[in-house]
Length: 246
Image (spheres, rainbow, N blue to C red):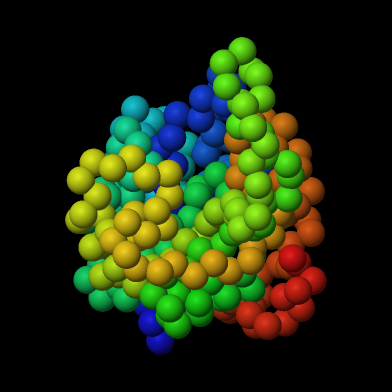
């Protein structure tokens, strides 16, 4: 069985979240911290041998006060992230165990994930070396210039919105980050693309939403209720009713 490490970036400033009491990744969702929803989907899997959470150094004291017991019980490695998302991933890569074959990066603020989807993206990465979830762009896209005036309408043909999890063979992702040279990537697939390795897109689901604003929390709570519950003792069958949740 291939061995996977999971990196959960949670060091972002969350400038669009607008909550004076909580950082976005730590806000309660359905009576549980947002990051815990994401982490727990991976922690019970036999093929996941390490889970790394990257947080902002300025959040360390507050995080330890609130979640040190969770971290100890669940066996999560918590590290200091960087100023940009890619900085956090790069810091986490240095902590990945030597026996890991594949590295999965999943947004800590993307809680609505389920076992069949994880099975599917892990299998795709094992087959191709690099795989991500994404959904086709459905809306009409406008390029907007100064004074919020429309410059042009952009064709949505062949445009997809990237999601996570994004999963890569270990050597591919390490090579991509070794050649990053300070490049400010918005996701890991972008760095893998830059070194010329093909990345396979697996059709994702709108349910796999990323929390950006407080209004998203209400939608996410409803989405969590729609997802299949994890089976005790391991991950669910990747082919059982998979289309039902698309």
